[in-house]
Length: 181
Image (cartoon, rainbow, N blue to C red; front, side, top):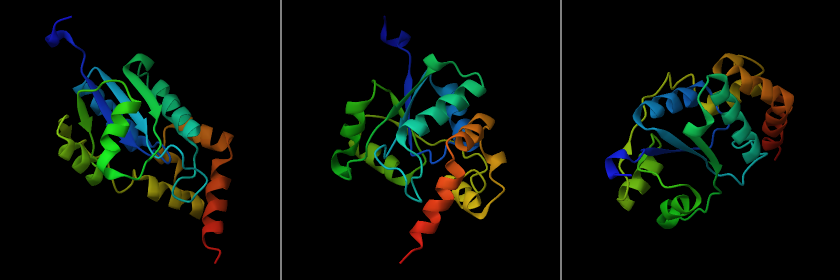
């Protein structure tokens, strides 16, 4: 296969706590830029905290369900968990060691952009925000804790899955436990 025929693959890293419509719009946009996307579920080892309520496997399931819901073929998206290492100097190499080869990084997170920029091996492109104020995982978790206004912010299959795993109660319980002195 000639170099010009090689399919381009883009990398998209996030915690996806939970995977919402803004994330889904980002994936759809990324797939207009590249043939395939590698979606990295970052900080994969963390769960059951107010900031990271869902396990890596639960987040993988949410993403796959959302992609299926909108008809994105599975062969266009590889979804992989990657644990965090808390060492910024080797973080890019850590990501590279966990995922298939990729050609470009799609990111809005300032640290992710900075680390890949400093590494210098991959172009880094911003992702258009999709109503960022509303489609924000921190805001969604806050709304779940407060008891409403979150369902319309997630793909239907993700809502169903969160309800199936009792995720609403988990988020609410974790928020309460976080306030105990």
